[in-house]
Amino acid sequence: MPEAKSSGVRIDYTDTGKKEPALLLLPGWCASRAAFGKMAQMCAMHRRVLALDWRGHGASETPEKDFGSADLVKDAIAVIEASEAQQVVPVALAHAGWVAIELRRRLGARIPKIILLDWIIFDPPPQFMAALGALQDLQQWEHTRNRLFSTWLEGVSNPGVSQFVHHVMGGFGFSMWSRAGREISAAYTRHTNPLRALEGFNTPVPVIHIYAQPVDAAYWDSQQFFAKSHPWFSAKRVNALSHLPMLEAPEEVAEVIESFVASK
Image 1 (cartoon, rainbow, N blue to C red):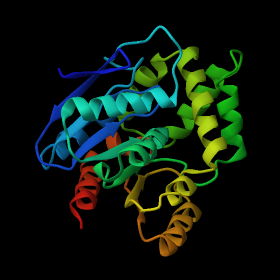
Image 2 (tube, rainbow, N blue to C red; image 1 turned 180 degrees about the vertical axis):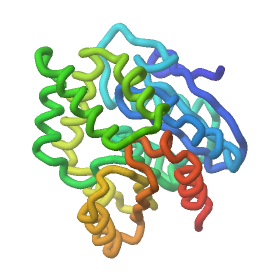
Image 3 (cartoon, rainbow, N blue to C red; image 1 turned 90 degrees about the vertical axis):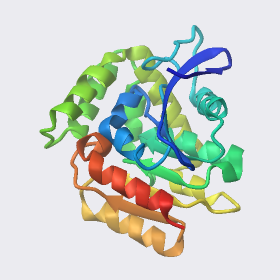
Image 4 (cartoon, helix red, strand yellow; image 1 turned 135 degrees about the vertical axis):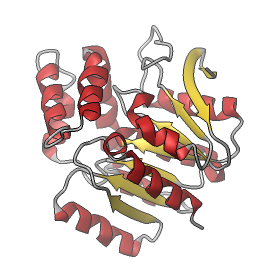
């Protein structure tokens, strides 16, 4: 299994398939690269796929010191450099999108496109920001995490999705969930929302948002309205219900990804 060193921390990753630009699969906080499941295998039929575990997650090393989003960016860059990939398209689950945006800012044309999966790309609702604060409270974090799980799994019957949420994401304790709450909250406070951060590039980067939640038409309509004046942005709602559409509908998500990456 290949690995990279990020500020002395061992970062474990997989490297499958051929052809660039390669995909760099970025899990969210309190997750692992297993979040991409069969989708990763299907993508590797068309091009190279790099899938990492963040420090403190999955098979990667857990550092003794605290860490944050800036360290995750270092982890991603370490994998890119270790793999010697020349061009990489980040495929970022939820708040790993902040890492994808920073990769584009730092590496420029080596990041020709960005793929976002199931993310709050507009201003976050007040109740979500409150939940991020509650995740940092020792008395509230577990109840808050379980409420998030219920939202992510509403109406979902796919056992693989439920198992990943409850057993992988549920396997992390207060230290990681509170860290996630702190870092996600700080990112929204700094940038307001992901689309505003993306608007800040002098040279726009093509971006697609592939999502399942929320299902309401207003969220879709808002994305289409934004796309009309920002031709670098597009959105695709897939036939899934959960917060993890790539686990629930791997074939469809893989097809959307390959079509987007292969397009001129």
